[in-house]
Length: 112
Length: 115
Image (spheres, each protein chain N blue to C red):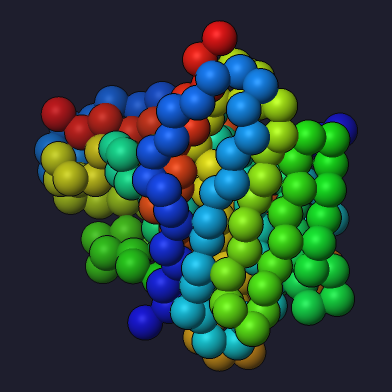
């Protein structure tokens, strides 16, 4: 069965650089969520999109932005990276109101 | 502020033991409570509990939702070394009417099962 695909799996960036993470939801899922999980911490909700519109916003820094495209894939853009941005970034997708959230494998971002 | 608290934070048992993991929550507009198992990477889904389905069972795992006490337990019987993982409790809800699917996670319980 198709799952949530995230790319890249690993990313190493220097401070003040920019990173773009991509998420391809399960086909026919209309909602995408982004979570950030720091070392030893629980996942924290960043932002979500429903039918290409932002539906909710959590603890996403102003340096980050995201969007969902017409094919439902989503991109998380992170600028002016800081050491504290090093984390595992998960994307999840669901059919709103009908299914649980299915998670991708995550992108491990390391900022050096 | 929405809050999910899990206990214990860490648990070490031997194979064959039974464990009970706890999750309590304070979330506005509660919709469902989910349990996930996280090994090295992505959380993998175990159970979803809602008002219309407060008890679920799958093999050696079972879970109950107590909406009155705003809590849930996850039971694992006859534990195996492969059960070693972080078990995350997450609650769907919070915020306004567009918050379908938004999950607030607990800190997780790290379960270690020794042979």
